Image 1 (tube, helix red, strand yellow):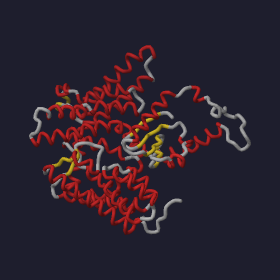
Image 2 (image 1 turned 30 degrees about the vertical axis):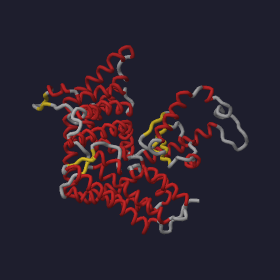
Image 3 (image 1 turned 120 degrees about the horizontal axis):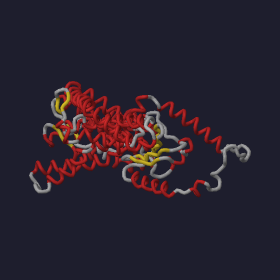
Image 4 (image 1 turned 180 degrees about the horizontal axis):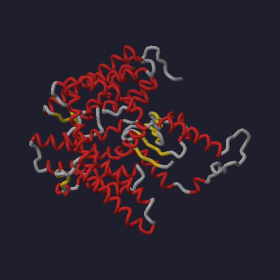
Length: 462
């Protein structure tokens, strides 16, 4: 094992040889909802809460591992050492594992998948802070609008807003870490984006604004800093490396950020906001149908986290992301599909027990327990759940075309857990009503599609 991390529901392990993972035994363990192999990351779906505790235990075991553990009897067969007749040697297992791993890498090494996976690796560690600060921001907004606790509201606002004000630094840190640079240098370069003093910098007749380019500018700055750092380390003598490499990295990447990347990233961010507004106002129903219908497959593949920079950019620009409520409808379709399975398979106590245990998490927007415990094993219900998500997304999209925007002030929760984070352009009441209507539509469409078509000719695995 080379690394341990987790997101909201998955334990993400870096395995030296993923081929040695005993997937049937893992899936048979109580509490394991499924496994996903995504390039070099081996993901075990455990669900919210459980995954944090399991990750802590894994990290403890990694820290306390000793050389004696690695040299225990039965684990130290040297390559080429004869074993019992017909038993493969360690070298044989290693070679076989490398072939399997190479095949998996080849299948998952498309440029698009690789890019999405690396972006997800940058932003997944930020999710807990995004959730916590988003909830506090929503609470502060409610108190401010209601006129309650005026002495406490500014403090809550400061606590909630501090992270978002400095999110560029954290993005830069993790970008450099992901691409093989020095993380603190990535954070130092990205800090240029949010430094208030950039308001005094003028280039080409235009004055910069602190935060211009947002997370996109921070990502680009840290990526450039990593390229500069690697170039310096290959050319500067070792005796001068400790002085010149960090200096040149910050200088070159910092100036390039000020005089180029912040302008470019700002333009891209503005275009992203404009495109989103146009898409929802002109083709909202179609956009919602497509986004709501296709999000479950992204969750299944673990690629949904790659959308975090888009959400973060919209939150920086508009105060909320209008995409998250649309995507959350996929979870509503999944809940409806699970309810239909529960109603149809009355004699199957095992599946019904799984649904009863996974449904509360599904109502709160955590879809993996239902995906890996119910819909994927059954087959068709996964497709009919997508139908429910598409219907819910189209419902919200129709209201977007009518001028009612439904957004979220933070990234992470969905389902019922998104209600405290809702924001829009027509007040909280209208926003919550449209979102609730989308959830109801997703539940109903997922239930009806699954009840009518999802279980026909479907059998459970033995």
